[in-house]
Amino acid sequence: MTAPIYRADPDLVKALGRVAVLMGGNSAERAVSLKSGEAVLNALIAAGVDAFGIDVQGNLLNAVSPADCDRVFIALHGRGGEDGTIQAILAESGIPYTGSDVLASALAMDKLRTKYVFEGCGLKTPKFRTMTSVEDADDIVAALRMPLGVKPAREGSSIGIRKVGSREELVDAYEAASEHDPLVLIEEWVEGPEFTVSILQEHALPAIGLSTDHVFYDYDAKYLSDDTRYQVPCGLAPDDELRLQQLAQEAFRVVGCRSWGRVDVMQDADGEFWLLEVNTAPGMTDHSLVPMAARAAGMSFEELVVRILEDTLENADA
Image (cartoon, rainbow, N blue to C red; front, side, top):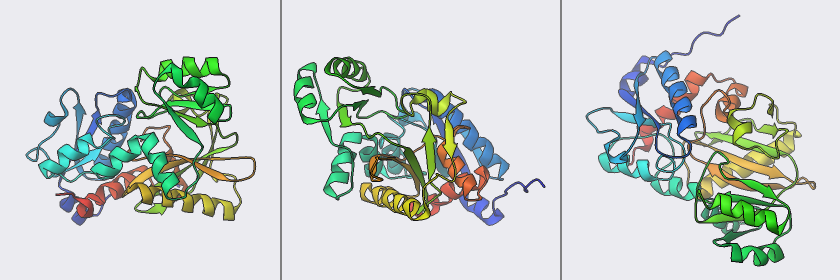
């Protein structure tokens, strides 16, 4: 029997008013954002919400005005859309928007400073160093255990990330990553299964286990490959999944995030969980993990996007 199509409550639809879905943007994640935005827009319309899409290009200051809409669903990924920039513009304009506020968005986008917060709060995250030139390679090799992960500090969707096992590979990976960001994060690679925990309205959704034939869960595995394997249930014992969910909720909290997002975690051979990062505007494509976790919790995509949008009635910065 086909499940009935989710329709938002008429009073809620009225309260939400006219909704702009911002997508596209100017970052390296533009193509993914367009897919996310189209999916969100179609779901909102199907749920009965008065929504329209805006392909954001060029100057973000001109993206939207209070005359255009009553609130915004941010489906932008990466710089400009996920780092506090569009959030600051919308807050200054008095337009309510989905997701985390300016400070939490900026912090979560910066993987280095997020790790400082994790460390300061006593949450486990892999040992790390920063690399700003090839001259740093010897000190990093001496300080950290191979293999290492090399990643631009302020990019998303695994753009620019490599796994390396030698000094020479480290230098090559640094030079490639620094094309995306002059600040490059180097961290010890945790060998073991990867998990992701989606957060919705401060609650953890079912964890998802990830596996791929790629070296790791990279851009292709996330958005292009059809052979990436998703485990829902995640394969952990109930007590371990609860521990993982609680860790993700704590990571979400200490970074200052609100409403919705996703936390990525590795598990080592001893069963310990290690935090990688927090995502404040995760992908919402047909390959994306938050919709998958919502489905596992019995929630349609239409209900998911309406619930995210509903939070703007309480979380307006203005």
